[in-house]
Amino acid sequence: MSGGRKCFVGSLPDGTQESTLRAEFGRYGEVEDIFVKPGCETGRQWAMVTFGTAAQALSAKEGTDRILKLPGNDKPVEVMIARNQSKDGPGDRGPGGSNEGRPKKIFVGSLPDGITENTLREEFSKYGQITDLFLKTGCDSNKHWAFITFSSTEAAETAKTSTDRLLKFEGCDSTVEVMLARNQGMNGRDPIKPGPGTTVEGPSKIFVGSLPDSINETVLRAEFSKYGQILDVFLKTGCESHKQWAFIVFATNSQAQAAKDATDRILVVQGGTSTCEVMFAKFQGKNGQDPLPARGSSGSSGGVPAPPPMSQMPQQYAWRVYQTPQGIPYYHNHATGATQWECPMELHYSAMAAQQAHAAHAQASMYGAMYSMTPPTAMYRPY
View 1 (spheres, rainbow, N blue to C red):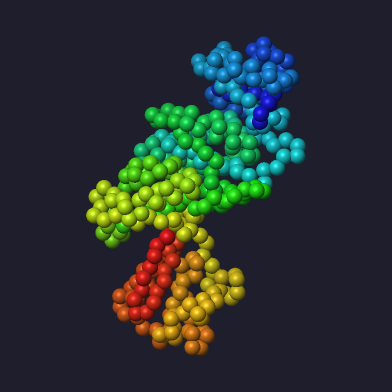
View 2: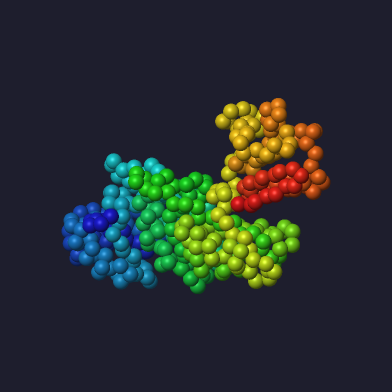
């Protein structure tokens, strides 16, 4: 908050007393209130100091931030103007506040090997109350990441501003990357609700196909990070030779667009014999998966969908096979008007087409592909 009278003071020695803080910060002006956070973990003590004027608070920040050392501590305190100016700290909205539809979750990337949930909680709890933490390990060296959800938007924004490209954990040579999570649901799955007048940005996830058998996440990150900040990489190996594929999520739509335009049918990845195919992922959720509708019911609740208009249909065959937006095949007879999930006995594909139809169903459940099949051949297009 611009012009705030309250300062956040972190990295305080254990057992810091209000009298000590009042004596030290009283040099910069009238101290109206001091809140020392009780029950902090060892080495994580913090406090809020409220001055009579914003000018006094700013003077205190400039005179003490990473400069002042209190007795019992071997490192200086961290002082910043509190974004949340309510009484009890960054986790409290204060009277009349509302967080509905506003981001409270942050993404933390470039975490070191061996990082633990306790370490993350200790470091980020100084900015506010943490309500949820999801840590993803098993990534490439020093490329682990996490989602941290706070009780308020202000706490999340303060954590981002205070740590992005500034915080360095023990065991890592580089600082962490911190941003407001683009998706705010469980493990980052639900999109942020746009506020009034907000323009919803386009997709930020791309599908990369025709990757070589030797591909790995490190190579993909090295190749695509030149187009922007990568939030997540999902690599699918074990496919047919030179048919491995991946999803890459960028921080913004413009970065994803730049990557697509610069690499689609142009980039030959190390170890590959042909260019890779790059396109926007049709489904932007976790690993391209969105909930599938229930089968066997009718109407908009997930039953057999209405067939496409007759004007769009070839007339060679009575039975046609289509896909729902989620990739589930269904069948429609344009002579009788029957529509059903089960493949009709009258419909005979060649052995190759049948195998492709089976593969279409399996792949669709894996990464949200949409397939279009026309007898006697079957073709697919992954997203």
